[in-house]
Image 1 (tube, rainbow, N blue to C red):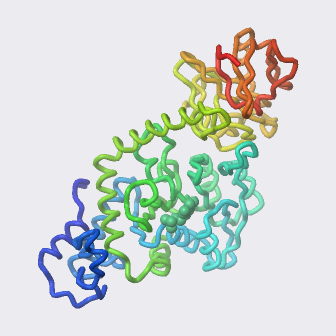
Image 2 (image 1 turned 90 degrees about the horizontal axis):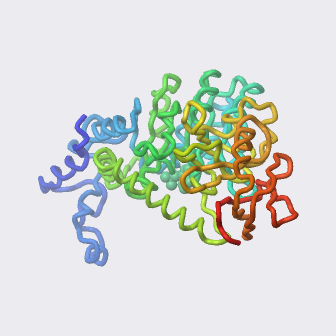
Image 3 (image 1 turned 180 degrees about the vertical axis):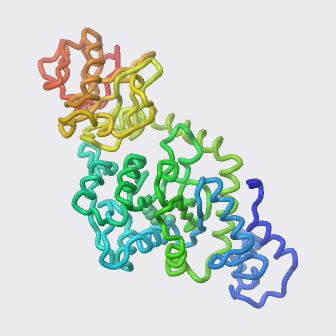
Amino acid sequence: MDQSRTPLFDAIKDYIDLSPAYFRIPGHRLERGISSRWKDVVGEEIFKFDLTETPLVDDLHNPEGAIKEAQLLAQEVFSAEHSYFLVNGTTCGNEAMVISTAFEGQKIAIPRNAHKSVLMGLIISGAEPIYLSPVLSKELGVQGGILPEDVEAMFRTNPDCKGVMVVSPTYYGICSDLRGIAEVCHRYNAVLMVDEAHGAHMYFSDQLPEGALAQGADMCAQSIHKVTGSLTQSSMLHVKSKLVDIDRLEATLHIVQSTSPSYLLMTSLDLARYELAVNGKEMINNAVELSNYGREEINKIEGMICLGKIGGILVECGAGGCAVGVGLNVRGDAAEYVDADRAPRRPMSIAQAAGAAPERDALLAFVCVEIVGAARAVASGRGAAVLDAWRAAQDLRGRRVCLRIKDRMRAGRVREVDPERGIRLDEHAEWFMPHAVLRVEEGCEE
Ligand SMILES: Cc1ncc(COP(=O)(O)O)c(C=O)c1O
């Protein structure tokens, strides 16, 4: 399709150009009834876009023209099979996903960190919730992701569960291993719904984890207004699935959406989609670069830590090769894991990475070591991935390093590295448990 088109925006412009005698709602009639105090500040043109259904501008609840085309363009950009404009935010997208997936008395798995709209969906549908607990990072006080193995365990006791809802990314930017969760859900013929309120941008940069649909989710709702440039309250719902009952979903959307959908909001979705299609990669990659810079600078401030690639949940190993990188106190968290020495090189959860290890639950934490030129990792705990990391950590022996432990720094030559006890420096009698170590740098002074 021609992504440079903006069908709804153009239809409204054409309609306004006709200077219609307007006897419809809204009662301000294009702009005449709007307070002049407001118009003096913002001008009057924008109010002409605040319309209701007319033959030219289509109908959200029965799209056949401009809105239908605008939704099809969005569908193509997000590689979905069906896309819907939402004028009641991701709030109504979550409600629709829940209501259309499980009827009264049927089971649906939702995370403890679900948005209240998911609870509203439960109230309306009467479905029975089974709660999934996201991993909690006690050190950072934030909730992490949902683990595929927790979803698997849930299905073992509830094989009749109709669907699983996951928030990814969370408000804090933490992503779950959706590919792993989708695989589990589909084995049980259940629908994976993703609250992607904060993740519409993830489809436009290969520096970020893939978007939910690309990882196999059946449905996702995105607040385009939160991260990708539309007006507040405008969102999208996408479907890519053989399991979703489209008639039921569309019937549900009629229930949860206003019967007076705002054309301002829908136009903003049409134009946000256009910008994403045409300039999205450049804009989002630029934003990723800026955020990396911001994160690095914040992490240099004593006592502050910013979740991200360094010293946080997301860690990548440099081209120099390393064992593992990760966040703090994660204990099986859905942090991303990239191991330059292992194939495949795609990000995976720690639990997945360490999956082969029977003592996986004993995982404490990994500590990312950023050493200029070659990334190295130190890890504590047990498990295959951890042991790999410890092997790499042996290289630190005899080297001068600086450990950042909460708000203190400890500098010294590494005397011992012990999976049970941690790291010990020449100048210090105490052992530093790696889960307490925020960062390790080479060659710095205390
Ligand atoms: C995780 C999550 N889901 C859903 C929503 C609701 O989104 P919206 O404001 O687009 O209705 C929010 C809003 O903050 C959110 O943080």
